[in-house]
Image (cartoon, rainbow, N blue to C red):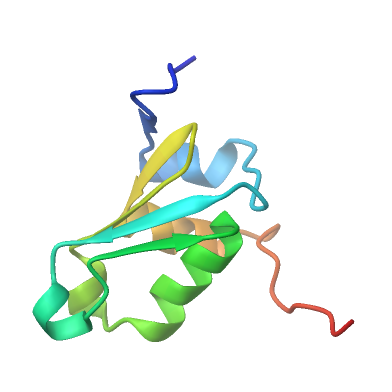
Length: 95
């Protein structure tokens, strides 16, 4: 168990097999502000942060990205693993 001030750093295998709450708030950190203009961005859900990273950032930009939730911190490879999971929400339903 990790404490609130130090989220667990997740490796690719853990990102693939552990239970993930895609609805929890997440923060995206990028060291490449000149090219992406992102720097820091807050998302209402981990799902939104992962989707934004994969769908809107070039592969080179993704290498400098980390997504952090209250419980975990995901680097580029783990973000890709989350996106490729079978239980990752693929399409938002219109309401």
